[in-house]
Image 1 (cartoon, rainbow, N blue to C red):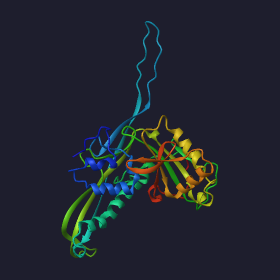
Image 2 (cartoon, rainbow, N blue to C red; image 1 turned 90 degrees about the horizontal axis):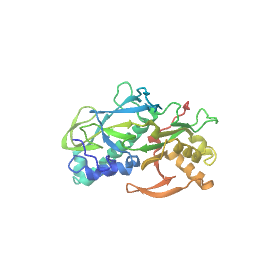
Image 3 (cartoon, rainbow, N blue to C red; image 1 turned 30 degrees about the horizontal axis):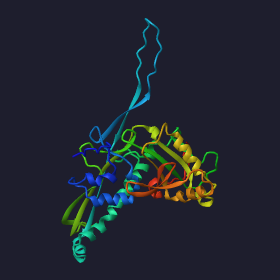
Image 4 (cartoon, rainbow, N blue to C red; image 1 turned 30 degrees about the vertical axis):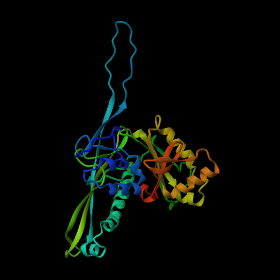
Length: 335
């Protein structure tokens, strides 16, 4: 069963708790995801328009107007476009808790929920990592994340190491500016499916160890079907080749993060939307703070997004994500 969108026409996971009642998604699970991954506070979730796929027509060239005189016609013109197909991927896992372990803890539902919280957080971090680093691959099981789509030289990719020497062992990372919206960049789920992480309590059942031996256990299934749709590629900016190694040695002067972020915002073709957000790995947020302290061209301003205290930079929320989510690399991208 697909969800009916709210008046905004979209959902974020921060809005799902109210919407999920009776649809098999546990509110506490949603809360755990929000707590673990602020990424989902602003990323819209929309149902696919073609089963487990989402098809988008991207206009690549607009028709031009023509001047005419009296008694003179004009030529027929049309816009040029490409059809882009984004697909969802299925992710699943299940937790197994030994029934005797449950008994020793009083068959406590609270104890079991705490035990299974690791699965929720693991799913959240794994899904967030795929949004940035996912690669569909030959088997088509996964979906392409931002990194796989913005890896070549274009207006949406800024080279943070341009004109600088990058050592063979230097660690590099990215800063992302994403202008989320239901018509530009959003997450997708199957047309007749459920949005977000779905948990199913299977109760006490037979389970098997690595050698095929049976024991009784409480089992919970986890399922999350999701993909990434980019309908307007101009609404995502990647600041690539940010030298983490150099910033650790000289956080103030090694990489001018403020200038790079200003340049990135200016690459968005018009005004940023209400759900735009910055995503920085935890390995470089300290350097940004120190640079602002030294030369404050812009400031980090306290604010609140989806009930979470955040800071904004030039009016856009700044989310600090684990470095494992955004990823690192040692080979400089040729952008």
